[in-house]
Length: 315
Image (cartoon, rainbow, N blue to C red):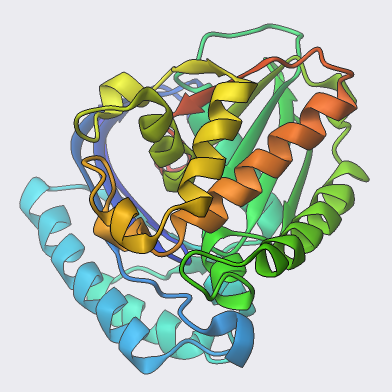
């Protein structure tokens, strides 16, 4: 048994998993010790400026310092810190890398979109029932990017990361509250172009099931289920009809931010960007339904994702 610590630093949130791990790589098993999430919005303004903002860096460093204390407290012997879309895009990412190294004592890894996709698939598939040779599409809908990963029991078949996410689309297009039809149409055009780009690499028509991961998808699922509070156990493994999920996406997109803030399962750090997350997820599912000629009729949600994949990769 090895105690490991994984940190996933994305565009919107930074998350920590300390777990007892046994086994080898993707066949390993994790037992949670600590699982935490902070919304630090590291990608604030990156789409427009190409740089990480100073206040975003400070928020991220503060969260990392807290995580470092938890890692010491719980005695994790192996640590891996992974940064994704916002950091990949930033000209000043060395400032981020140097700051994390000083706080955590390990070298943070700014990974490629392809590796991000593979880690997301490993994390999601580690806790879902095996479908054998039937290809499953895992969609990791993040703040700055979305990963499409088709795989089966033997691993990843094809993967593509594209630059659409809930923070990026909100900052680029959905500025009004609620967004105007023109803003929604402009965002949808970007999303469609990104899905088309992904489909050139990932054969969406081979999909036999679709699994959505990350905070936008799980929050949309909570909304579709009308949960009285955010409940990972109620969300994980939920399989809902596409129409139910699509309606939940549209509802969140068209709500005011104040109305979204009043929802009992809504994290404060997602209030302003969940509408864009809903737009991305709705369009992905519509395109997938078209690609499979209606064979995909439902979508699964998983609470386990790239964070679990990072922890398993340490093995």
